[in-house]
Image (cartoon, rainbow, N blue to C red; front, top):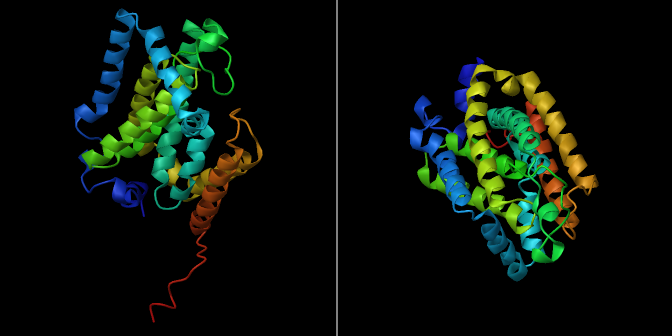
Length: 282
């Protein structure tokens, strides 16, 4: 089976038969980052960055810290790849596209962070002026890497489905998770809007590159990537690196669940099936 033919088969429910459905109409490609850029322009010229930050951040006082800590947890890069592990056998192109997109987004975002060197809210505001949940994460606020990561996930899955309602759900969910970066007090609205635009654009580029470099869903690629992601699960289970209080049990639960599901799919890459269907076919 050739790599191109394998790609079209393995996409499953996230890909229709038409090649055009993978790269949908221009609205879905440029619409979300376009709205983000428009939002950035409005916030900037209205000088509303601080006021909008304080308004969103204040919501956490009514919902409680745990809600936003859990939401922002899902925008972490390590968590994102752990969640992708169960796709290692049937849809490895998703993992490969997300990985390529993450590399592009990280290189670009880190360069911008150091170029503009915007202070995060904890460095720019007195502690009593806003509500901080978890660590302050130091400097380099613009753009938000976590917002980029969650929009990479939403973007890749959106580009691989022809269902507009599913795309809308993915974008809405990613937006709420991205807003959590403001609610926990570590990013400005401009950071989140920029990060979302970068992540969505990187998702499109990651899919484009994955079609021209299909190593990630070759047999060797799946074995190596699967092993790395299993290691990510173990790391997530052992290390409390998020800095958010009282979510370690939740973090370990996510790590355990996806390690179990991912291990089952990873064994299939080697042709090992724990439950044979041969008996039921007689």
